[in-house]
Length: 497
Image 1 (tube, rainbow, N blue to C red):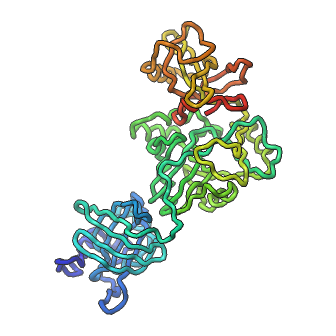
Image 2: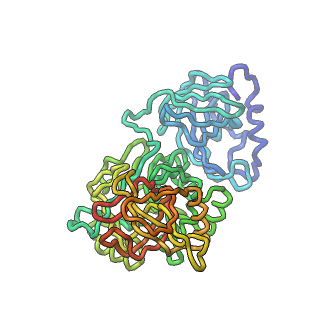
């Protein structure tokens, strides 16, 4: 490293690695012979630059002016704004001072191929500059603070913020947020003027935590689902250094462009990266974004829904595998009619003045469905006959009257299965077998085979009978984003997670 105690190499020697890696006839990057004003001991303060580099992997390059060169680190997640976090920083070759203002596209096939843009520039104070530790205070337009870089192994260093965030009101991003849930309603609110209306999407609820250009996707119970949907990785690149928590739904579209939970089923339970990539080509998924919980050091959950939607719109999130559909104010009836005509699940009504009640079910959000469809606990199965002999003929499902309570039998579901899904269900239910019934009260037929009530099925049906039994139910798939303990009877008489 140039400028470190005990290092006596010349600037020419220091830039040898930079020259070796680059073909000046191909890359627009500055050459080592280009003039640049060096720092003077009696002159100005040394400079720093942070460049955002959209290479194979998005990262930020921190460069410190020292002894006639720019001493450089690639920082995959950017400089940490919080002293509680350490970020990886990889020491790379020194760069010429003329690189300080470089922006442009490094062509494909070249070292570091991708777009480079200036993210921040300024000056810095030096506290330490040693072989294994560099401590500086940065004074830039976007970065202001004291940082230490320390070597851990070889070229791998860590960068740590030593002082509190510059903004005293800065808040850390939540690690495990929970989504706000809607209550079921039979009709839209009468006073439509105080409400916003959105399409109800038929998919998997997902919160996306985006920081350092990386996306972490969590389902409604906090389960990690990032690896199942590689399409979302590019969303992190699109947001760059923005730090946000988004709320939305992951969906798969059928041939008519409608969300299909059954199609998404084939993406929900894959474990190997190869299987995920193959299935993603066959059944692409998209992230439909409808709320914003955190933005660049601020929780937005206390803001009214209308203001959160304005902030979300300002992010302009419309990409190849994500979008932010419009919401509509005071015209819910037209949206509900349009959703019914297009075969969509229904509409969500949200009070315009409502805050985001994370982890709670609130009547500030109401779901009005075109089709009755709920998540129900699987407590057993009936053997099949005819073509299904030796396999599952019907699932036995139920619900709880309170979270974690006993399971009440709601009937059998015998349609909606593919042969492949029957095979998969059989393998999942076999290790859950039990001797006695998990159901309380009314019981299924005597030939029933019982299982521990841990799986949750998505079921569409016509109506509930007066005995709380499903009428004309059809299986739509298993859900892994709903805990079976939370499948309770809704106060309106419907069942839902």
